[in-house]
Image (tube, rainbow, N blue to C red; front, side):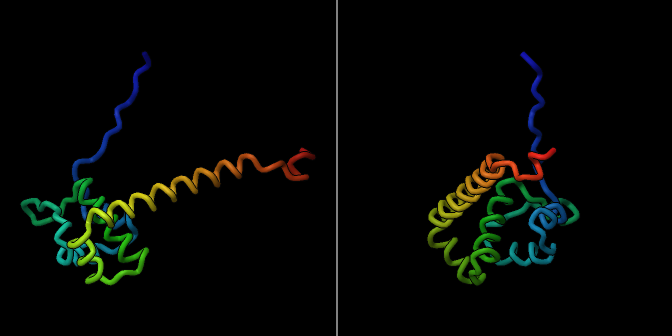
Length: 121
């Protein structure tokens, strides 16, 4: 049986890493940390925020609601307080559909007939 490298996931992500992942400023992450109770990053002795993979999922959901769907912070906060499970299911469905779309586009591009230039070579 061949050796398979284990997939190593980080336990904690710094605020800079999270900002880079989502292409936002660290100040936005700090602001959302204060506004949304679902975000609960741990803090080290220096007071630096450390985000777990679960925190990243919460942040991804908030990002989707505020940045992609255009909800206000107040509206997103209310939705997460009143119907977090429904919002999470909807977000997961959208994420899966986007993945399927990307796979279909890749398949379509692979199956397209060769152009005249490709046939000459």
